[in-house]
Amino acid sequence: MLYSDLTEVIGNTPMIELRRLNPNPAVRIFVKLEGFNPTGSLKDRIVKYMIERAEASGELTSDKILLEPTSGNTGISLGMFAKLKGYPLRVVMPDNVSTERRELLYAFDAEVILSPGSEGTNGAIRMAQEMLKDDDRYFMLDQYGNPNNVLAHYETTAGEILEDLKGTVNSIDLFVAGLGTGGTLMGAGQRLKETFPNMKITAVQPYPKGGLQGLRSLMDGYVPPIFDISRIDVNEVVKDEDAFRMVKQLAEVEGILGGISSGAVVYRVLKAAECMENGVIVTILPDGGWKYLSEQIWTDDARTVSERFTGPMW
Image 1 (cartoon, rainbow, N blue to C red):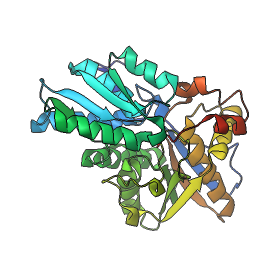
Image 2: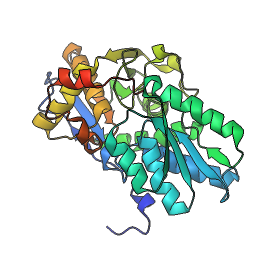
Image 3: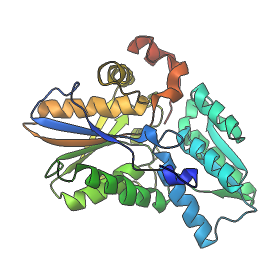
């Protein structure tokens, strides 16, 4: 299929049924593979929405410098968009993110500003906010507070899920997603619940000070402005070691090379399936695992990998 622009490839990611790892034959598990987006994560969806709407409103103009705090995926997506649209980009990220994430940003000619890894993305957010106050050339999309983050998942992610499953299932009983910015849970969760009112929404978090890249624990003190906890039915936490072990199992059993947060959500999905009499579970695998190869997740045992992550990644 021919496209005139790389941004046209965003979305319409594949959805597959998880069969080999599924512990309960009476439950069907469907996973949406967001690693198939151009920069390898679901963040391409939200960056497209946030940039295009900021340009349309006149807030983002050609003289601005894009600035964004991120644990990696949003920054990488911004790197692609900044190059395509001609904006300079500065990204603030914790100094303990994977090597691949930094290298991808350098490949897009972004300026990477490192914040203390011990402070996770909370520290990156604080640093970026201070930079924004001091220089009016900066424009921050603010993925944690931008309603277009939610809208992207409401209109595209959930819309695709409904289309993907049309004629296959009559309802969705449980939607499971990791808690990062909260955009997936709020946007996709809301639209799916509008269609299936009895559906439950589960948010997956790491333990406080955990080392799961891309996920955050609300117990660490920062609640994204777009996130409304009252719309979540179940909050589940995942140990680092369990998430890393599941990342390996996804590759070994299902042939899916998913990222760290993918391991966390699938771990909770399988636990939920064990407890259900029957039903349908849908989840999102936020990114591909190739961005984490340097972490040796697939070669070392899960405990060793967990111990090697010395700082929080939320």
